[in-house]
Structure formats: structure tokens, C-alpha cells
Length: 489
Ligand code: NAD
Image 1: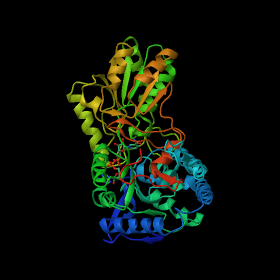
Image 2: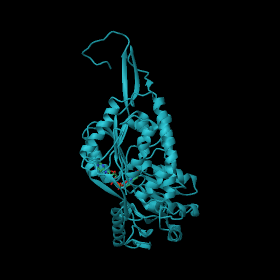
Image 3: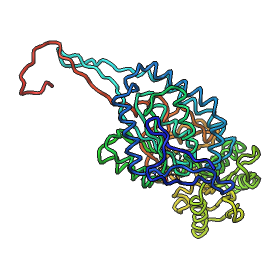
Image 4: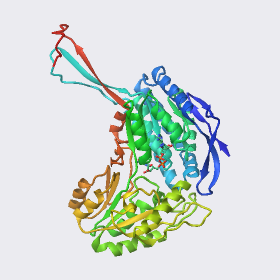
């Protein structure tokens, strides 16, 4: 059993309470390590360290080219350790080793990308309309950032926050999910090796209700980057509003994956499967509503069922496994409850619908046909391998059903008509739209949600401005201060 410690101000430490939380391997369902159960006092200590490193330390004042070089060095170390870190993530969240390895091998790109931006944030001189004045805009780091992450892709979702925050000159306190903190604690060892000053990056571990809320409530924190569920996101936003912190929220979804009758159906079947059964459906961008055009509904449904029936369920470390376990017992119970809800609502279960045995956390790939969009199974995020298949008549009907959701994170469109692809892509209320593909992501592509899927965007050049304040400087070069009782406009 491994016992991890937290990192505060460059020191490895226990929680003040000395209590620990067990991390459970979702495949064996046995504990394999423990993490400290941090609380309010630990939150304060971590923010003390990040605040001191921001105010007094060299980081925020460092030549940005040097800062970029350090971030690049960190990225090189992640390249070296990617496979090891991926193995730890699988141990904690039970996702497929092939997927987590691919993720971890790509994670360094976040640090390379934003390292390159560190010395390219340019202010500008304004063509100002006040005579005798020179006016310019500069960008300054916001200060202490708190990054809160969920259990499904710990280090990738950390990278979306940490890489731009560091490049901007901020200092950071990370709070990974209480279910999957090990990879983050292992990863931050690399900061010391890369030569970062202490206190620039700190990690505290514990529950959202104890530790997370204390971090969010601290007045010295100026920016919160949160990825997680809608309920946690709402609490974070409300608490952060008390002292007007900047907030980015990446929340849940109920994304439509729309198959038109003119689609390449071989590809569309694979798109439907990857939308919902990849990552055992435990992904915010799951294409959990499959919208299929009337004329091909029955035949397409049969093909998807046939494909899903052959999915190999098992050990996530086995390269042949396609569907792994649920990550937590809470998720397991929640998904089983939604399967019951779908049945009671009159949806027709055409595949799966059951837990596989009592000693493990597997749920069969499950498909419900004859779902209507007003059912709870079509409106609420399940976060598991449960697909709702909904019928539509034409383009307008598909757009109406797709947009009839509280969420707006992502959407897939399968068609061979270019006109239709553009028209539907522009009409959909979602932060990401994929045409003839699904579940593609890049550090270069802004990502986030419309409506209750979130607030703000991560990734791409614009994300670095999430961690910068805009300052306007006015210089009077006329020397003459006119009527002091009247504003100069
Ligand atoms: P969660 O909201 O339960 O927890 C996420 C993190 O927030 C954890 O670290 C948790 O401890 C913390 N937290 C919870 N309540 C908090 C509070 N009141 N104050 C401060 N911190 C708090 O989510 P989860 O179950 O870990 O993850 C699943 C959810 O994450 C799903 O809804 C999924 O859609 C969403 N998600 C979104 C994205 C995205 O990019 N949009 C990506 C992955 C997951």
C-alpha cells in the first residue's frame, strides 16, 4: 500500500488532521494507496505558500522566456514519465490503459504549447482620442489560481489549467479528485526536478465539501478553474461570486450525436460507439443521445447494437479490452438507477441493462431505443455506458431535439452533404461540433460549454487570458492638468 503526501511550499506533508482517504482500484475493487484528507487548515497553508510565491517569489517577475524554458523542461520530464503516470491513472480510475497512455503521451503538448506563449503575450498602444495622452494596455498575471479536477482524466484536465496559468506567471494550488489524486501527487515531483521555485505549484488532497470549498472561499485566490459536475460547479460559482473571483467552469453534458440518412453509415456506427462506450461512457463529451433519421432508424439501430454486443469487457490493462469498469461505487449505483428510470419511463432496452456480477464494478454496454427527448434518460447526465436512441424526421427536427437540452457541451453530425454539415453545425448550441468524427481534442482547440455545460473556454491561445488581468496605463505628456473638477472625456 502506497501512502502519498501533499506538496505545500516545496515540502511534502500530511494533512493537519493526519487522516487519510483510501484510493481504490476499480478493477480489483481493492484499496491500493492512501492520500491525506486535507481540510480548511491545509487549504490555508497551501494558499499561504502560493500567495507568498506569487508576491515575494521570483515566478511572476521572472523573464518570461526563462519561465517558458522551465515549463518546457517540465514537459520533457512528462514525456519521460508518461507511461508510468498513465499506469497510476488506470490504477485509480479504471479507464483503459491504451487510452490513458495516449492521453499522457499527449499531455506534454499543453506545456510545450503554453511555454511557447509565455513570452508572446504582447500589450499594445492605443490610438487614444485624448490629446496629450499616451495610453497602453499590458497584461499581468491574476495571482493565485486554484485548479479543481475530476476523476476521469486527471492529468489532462490539470494540464488545461496549469500550463496556461504557469505561462501567465500565476502560482497554483491543485485539488485533484478524492478518487484519483495519486497521479497528480506523483506528477508534481517533476517540478522540483525541473527546477521550479517552491510554492509555485502546490497540491492538497481531500473532499470537495471540506477542502475544495475552503480553497474556493479564500479571498487571496483570484481565479478558479473547475472541471466537474453541475452541482459542484454551481457551488463553486456561487462561492466565488462573493469576492468576484474569475471562474472557468467545465461541466457535464448530454451531447447529441446526429446521424442523417445520407451519412457514411460504416463510419457513423463507429462514431456512435466511440461516443458512448469509449471510456465506459465516463466522459463529459459522451454522445449519450444518438439521434437517428426515421428512414434508417431500425437498420442503423440494429448495426449499433450488433457492434456494441461484441465489445470486450474486462481488465483495463489488457490491450484487447474495450470497455472497463465504472470508476466508483457511487457511479455504479447512479448508472443502475438511471437504467431503472429509463425502463420505468417506457424506453425499450435492446442491449445490456445489467451489472455483470456482484464482485466487480462492470455494467454491460446498454442501449435504449424508442427514447423520446422529454424522458429523464434523454435529459440528465448518466456518465456511464448507456445510450439513448431517439428518432427524428428532418434537419429542423434534429436541430430542435439536439438543442432541447439544459446542456451544450458537444455534438456529432454524420452526413455527406456539405451544405447540411455547415447549416446544422452553426445551428447547434454547443461549444464543440464534430462533423463525421467524434471525441477529438487538441490543446489548440478552444473547449467548453454553452448553457449549463459551463462558463468560459480552456485550450487555444485565448485560454492564457483566463490567467491575466488587463491593465490600462495613461501617461500625460502635456504637463498641463486642465479643470480638475471635470472628468476628461
Ligand atoms: P464532481 O463535481 O463531483 O467533482 C469534481 C471535483 O470538484 C473534485 O475534485 C471534487 O472534490 C471537487 N468538488 C466537488 N464539490 C465541490 C465544491 N462544492 N467546492 C469545491 N470543490 C468541489 O465531479 P466528478 O464526479 O469528479 O466528475 C464527473 C463530472 O465531471 C461529470 O459531470 C462530467 O461531465 C464532468 N466533467 C466535465 C469535463 C469538461 O471538460 N466539461 C471533463 C470531465 C468531466
